[in-house]
Length: 171
Image (cartoon, rainbow, N blue to C red; front, side, top):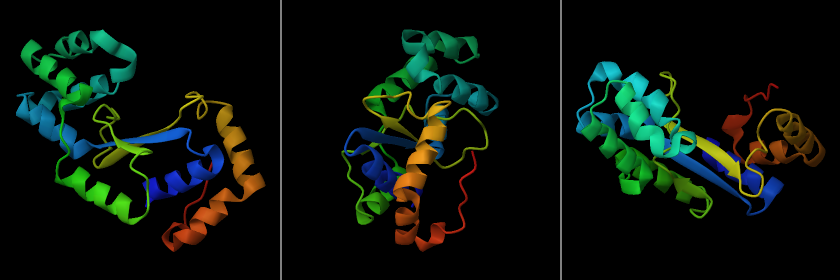
C-alpha cells in the first residue's frame, strides 16, 4: 500500500514525470548467497551495493575492497545492471501493485535499489522526479509538505486507504 500511496501522491504532484524504483532485500540476500559471498560480508556488501548509482564503474573495485572475491563482485555488478530476475517476493509485489491500479510504467523493478542499512529486510524503494531528481532532498522536502498542505493530496490518498490513517508526517 505504501507504493500505491506514493504513486497516487506523485501522480497528483508531478503528473507522469516520476518513477518509483523498487527491489527487495530478500532478493539481494539471495544474490549474495548465490555468488558465494560469506554471510559475515553481506552487510558490507549491501552498503557498497547501495552506492551503485554514484560508484559507477568503480563498484566492482569497492566490493573487492570489502573482501568480496573479484568473480563474485563481477556477478553482483552484472545483476545490478539488470541481470537479476524478480523472485517470488517481487512477483507478489508486482501483483499487488497491479491490483491497486499502479501503473507499471511508473513503478519499476530496479535491482540496484538496495539500501545499505541492516534493518531493511523487505521491499525497498525510492521515488525520483524525472525532471528534477534532487527534488526530494534537503530544503525541497519542506516544499513538498507545503504542496501537501495546499492541495490536500495526503488526505485524498489516506481516504483511499483507511489503514494509513495512523501515519503521521514528521519533518
